[in-house]
Length: 326
Ligand code: CA
Image (cartoon, rainbow, N blue to C red; front, side, top):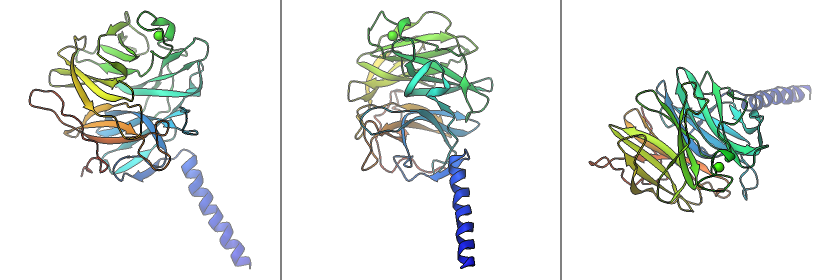
């Protein structure tokens, strides 16, 4: 009998150890089995960052009853082969911004400058009506991140001319141009952009409207050769469409649909990056059965291909996902 007790005590300690590891902030490793890439939790609004040859993936965590948005924090994952993934301890929460309220960690994106990582986020503002954009900073792509300003970077009252809605200041997407000038794009219903100072935490000039047809939200800039691409969510439910320009300042030529409505999700949010010689289109769907949906989204990755005239081929969403890189 004593041996049985000893066995249970040892097994209990072993289970406690592994549980504590998962909860206490160690790196959690998992294998991707096609799309969705992440299946142990719901993840939305992906933003990829390539740094030191590692593919980092940032996303909001969809929690709650699946009937409304409940997103208390942002998550960070990484891979070097699209097969084995790591999830790091939660690097940033809505509550890390003292000016923000609730579980309102909407879409975000991280960019690196001079060895620091700036995470542009969106949350409900506690005292200024509407959504607001914040920025957090860290010395590592996996954090921990802290509020870089102690106040919001963009608040709803700063943009009232083009739409009266209280959620037009969302979906921030930073870009550093070849000459070193940084920009921030964002918007819902109306797309905006503004220059950022070199410190990355202050606007440097006026907020300028971007003229794009049927713009809903989720702007993302990428560049290949001498073409700029501005992709965004259009209509509702959302398709991803895109425009092209020879300048970050436009004008932008509308080019049509890039990706169709993704399964079982009325929103979408794309991230486009080149990694180890291929282009990747990162997005979300509601593909996890049986609880997946518009408020329980899941990040997927497929390939992005170009036509000979530099326009983009329509994305083919797959359940297999992208191939593992050796
Ligand atoms: Ca506004």
